Image 1 (tube, one colour):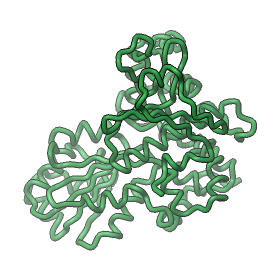
Image 2 (cartoon, helix red, strand yellow; image 1 turned 180 degrees about the vertical axis):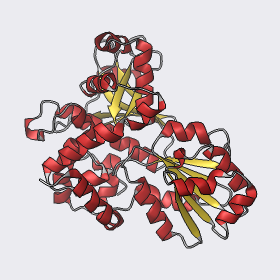
Image 3 (cartoon, one colour; image 1 turned 90 degrees about the horizontal axis):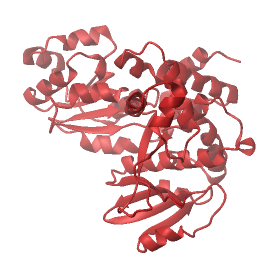
Image 4 (cartoon, helix red, strand yellow; image 1 turned 135 degrees about the vertical axis):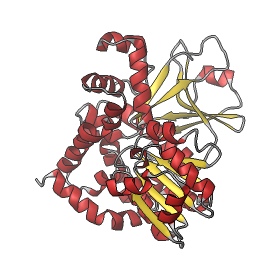
Length: 397
């Protein structure tokens, strides 16, 4: 079997050609938002294709452009002297400045503000893998001057543009196990997919957190993630997790918050209209990518032999809908719904003053909602999404 580094080299060479086959949903949004005096902030987990997306944007815009890399010391030096004169000299007649890994540049927020305020006609795109770094460093200085977008692993909507029905069905079964990181989708050999995901988890996933919070040992964070991985679709008790892992409730909450800021997991709260039987004080946690979840628990067994297909399907559908909402700029609140007598709905969308109940079942299509839900919310919509109709919910047909 070829070594992972060999495959990464191959990916580096061919990724641009492959990516042009899959148009990222966010691409057209970014192109429309490029405006003088504005900064587009792109965030997302490491290895989800931000740099490739930036290069595609540069290829599509017809204006003088420049790309800098925040990890390159020479590029850092270009931006070091924070004066209008220096930046005007550097930018010249450039109309679109792109800065990748922008969080590596000291005082990046103040520098971006100075450029867009003082240099007429310049537009800027800044990307970074660490959400908390970019938000902390660009948030206040760029108030009123920025648009923020997240970049996710490939989405079902992006695959839909290039797949026929047969290919889609086969790919879906692999996505449930190996996820949709762009480079994972390039690898045909399953052993290589597993090795790549293990590398992602061990070398990239927690890198930002360990640096940010000066954490020397990641053992407990991995243990926390393993526990979350086995509780997909279940309410999570921070107190119980803390007792099991030998840490305080506050530390559990702190680590989960950091993990959400680097796009590993995200939280969903319970929905209620203050009915006494509804559970609202607990949370559920989901992974942004199934492949990462399965790498955490070291289980890449095929669907046919899994006893957690329900968890896999719920996690996948919840994450895909989240991508769909973001990439379509939907204004929506997401919840789960559960009563103390264990009636529940996997996901509730609250949008435009209406409620939409969504249940996820891999193979069962029972469209009857829980009785308590019908009684409490008779005008709410309700649908069950399975492997045969799920595209109705996560694809722009």
